[in-house]
Amino acid sequence: MAQKKTIPVCLITTLYNEEQSLRPFLESLNAMTVLPAQMVIVDGGSTDGSLAILESFKETIADTVSMKIIVDATCSTKYSRSPIAKGRNVAIQNSDFDIIAATDAGCIVSNVWLEEITKPLLQNEQILMVGGWYQPLATSYFERCQALIVVPPVSTVDPKTFLPSSRSIAFRKELWKTVGGYPELTYTAEDTLFDLKIRQVTQAIIFNEKAVVFWRMRPNLFVFIRMNYRYGFGEGVCRCSTRNIISTAAKLAFGVMLIVVSTLYPLVGTALLVLYAWLLPFNKNIRDAFRVSHLLKYPAIAILKIVMNNVYIAGYLHGRFTAEQPQFIKLQDSH
Image (cartoon, rainbow, N blue to C red):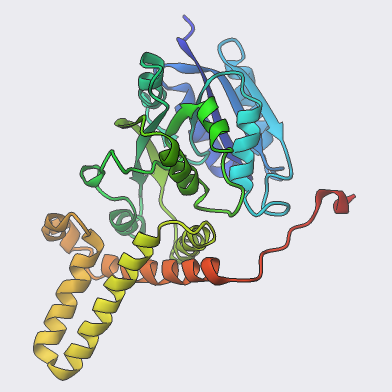
C-alpha cells in the first residue's frame, strides 16, 4: 500500500487522561487526505492508558510521520493554572516546521481538515493564520439541545472579526513568537486572548469553513455548567470579551424585566416572557427557532441557554474581580 502524502507542517495537540476518546481522535488523524510531516503531542502526565495508545499509534505511522510524544507533568492543573496553553507552547517549541496546525485531543477531525486548514498558508506566504470551523458531536437528547446553543451556525461568522478556537487553527510559528505564544494565565480563554493579540498585529487571517473539527458536547448538566463557568472565569481573568459579557447581561436583564411585567400584566407579560425565552437561544438565527425539530426541544434549550448565561456571567465576574489567585504545587516540592 502506497504511503499517504505528507505536507511540511507540524500538527500539535495536548492531552491529559484522554484514554476514552483518544483512539477515535488518532484514527481520524490517520484517515486525513494528507498527513503532517511532524506531530508533537504533549501529555500532562496521564495516569490512564493514554500513553500506551500514543506509543502504539506512533509505531503505526512511523514510516510516514515523525512523531514526538512529550510527557510534561507541569502541563497539568496540578502545577499550572493554564495547562493547555502551556502544553501548546511546549509543543510548538519542539516543532521543526514553520507552519503549525493545532487541534484538541478528544475531538474528531474531518478527513480534509489538515489539507484545508493549511492550504492558504502553503499557497500564500502573506497569509499568517487560518481559522477553521467546528461542528457538534451529539448523540443524546441533552447533547443535541446543548449543540443548538453552544455552536452557532457558520452563516453567522464574520471572517473579519472571527476569533478561531484552537481546536481548529493553523498559523506560522513566527507569528506565535511575535505575540509571545499562548498566554499562560488561565485554564480557558487562552486561545481567545491569543487570537486578540494576533488581531492587533495583523489582519492576514483567513477563515476556512471547510476545515471542520467535530467537537464532543458535554454529557450532562453538571459538566455543562462547569464548562461554561470556566469559560467565563477565563475570559474574566484575561479581561477579554467585554462586549460579550455586556450583551449577555443585558439579555438576562431584559428577561428579568419581562418577569416583572408578567406580575403586573399576567397574560401579556407571560406570553412575551415565553416568546423571549424561546427566541433567546437562537441569537442571530431567529428563523431556526421555528423549525419543527427545534420546537420539540422547548423548553429544554431555553432553560439551558438561561443557565449557560448565568454561570458564564458568574464565572466572568469571579475571574475579573477576584483578588485571590489559585495556588499550584511547585514541581520541586513534590520530590
